[in-house]
Length: 305
Image (tube, rainbow, N blue to C red):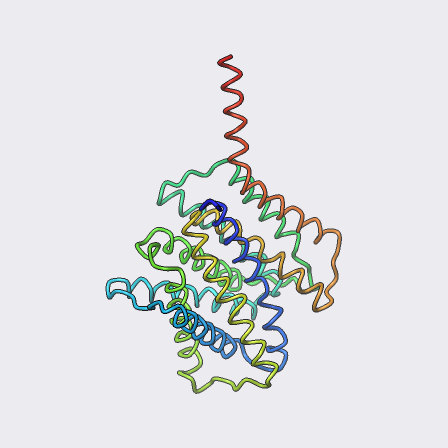
């Protein structure tokens, strides 16, 4: 029987790894000429429909209490606008740089949890966080376009902050007790409404260009959305906001591997080393505190003897 902590670690890594598959399913659709807002609308709408179908088969209700509606709406808007700000930043800076800078969100999560909720940052968590950020920085591959934009940086940090707030509110509010599938459904449904409004209330929505694109959008809705969102909520419930955000470092690893194996992007020694550093960061996070506790216990026993 798996412990809750181990379940949380597994869900956190699954959430990050599946979310990192977004380029695998979205890039071919974007290359067919579909815009970001249209793609994201179809992604969120289909994901919400898939989640509703799963709940229908399981004969479980998606109903929420009236007092939970404001929080659910807030979380859905935060979840959607994390994507909005990131895609807006792509217009001002290289995508690789934006994606790398976005992973400041674990730092924001840790700082907010420490300053406002009194969460203790252990040395192992701090080391894991530093290693994860270092490894992610090593994954960044320059495309020769090193332009920096203050507005682009602000948008990227806004995306990171919004996502950090989504994780924290999910952890620290009464929403934490809501079934993960129910919260995931409403977050996705609200997100679909956000992108529908952004597309001039549907007037600017583009048609899906091909049957292949429909299949890719369905996979985009299931793997890096339904699976990732549900696993994220479960991880937050089991191990908290800070640990879940650090485990999200598995996301860029998956994105890099997809780029190499599917799109033929080069795999350098530096990128490979970055992946190794991130794996070490996760191992430190998962095993570090327990190893330190065991070492302290042994040292106490020796001192007594």
